[in-house]
Length: 492
Image (tube, rainbow, N blue to C red; front, top):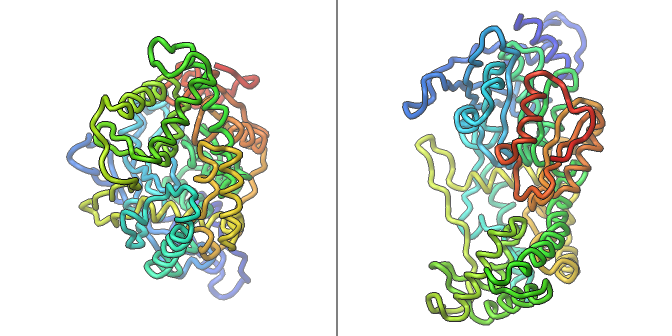
């Protein structure tokens, strides 16, 4: 019964109150939220009628349930098997700025039939993202560009950029920013659970979504059923340490690439030994610093070449790209023109649902900075020193990852970050060569979730495992359909 589930939900979330004449209302301030009746309607005409959407109302501040509210957009595709149905499988694509409303159709079609038989697939845009009371800061295209390599000549401008982004978000969103956090998104997930009448939820989360899932498991361990976490960061390093771990992992990936490419000199012409391949690459970077290299209409400076550091986790793709750069630098492609330039990311177009055009960047900073304000030094000089040091340590991207960010000037979130350490069962999927959530981070998540098992894809390249390795996919499907984790950690 929904009433019983709502009571359990309220006990988990509501602050203690003293008994009074309105004891029931005082004890259960979240009851009205948990007893909402969603109005499920077809999401759009482009997808099947089985894909339905609804909007839920949730407190902005769970510590003040009678205060301001926001809306959470939720979607559903019902389980295909009535007898086989187990419950709901919530889906999150990562981010923390990733909208997940379309996942029941965009991801659902690729899930095994036996998973779709057992679960209603539930998508949602996390608070502040997409259609869920989206945040917007009025950021320009240049202000949305976070790729800012260290240079003595540009550092003052980068400090001003970080300060400006924080100030614009504070001016545009005010006190709302404090409550757009991972912990509150986890509370929203548990409210979705209560509204749907479920005792527990299962979950499939990717990248940042693994951290969100781990936080939910920490906050609501008795509401956690079968959790699959694909490509996980170190939960203790979430924040500034997450960026710096990417820089540390980029070095071994680059070394692996030079070794692979040297064995294929006849194909790519980049060098017969790893040392020669390395020299070829850094000569290209130096040349592009003097005059940008034009490749297929994109002008690459040395810094914009280094900004593509994630490509080196995919050795074949990286070799082909560097070979093309070399040919273009040798005059075999279009002639470069003009001086060095930074290539900002384009503004995403606003949707018909009035999502602010800067929502992707604004929501990412909002969640990350509110979650992890304590991990970001206030003093800009600390970032200068760290960027200089880490560029020497990790020349491919150390200065990118240790540079200043808007979080340096952000106001703290509404509560401290979550320490993840519990025995909730979960299955962690991890590629060996993941540039965004390196293998070390997945192992740290595995240690933090002592009841988990880990499936490592040996030689696995790139970010996100699901759909790329049959062995890992089979392990996830078996767990979701039977509840059986592997007896021990697996290597696929």
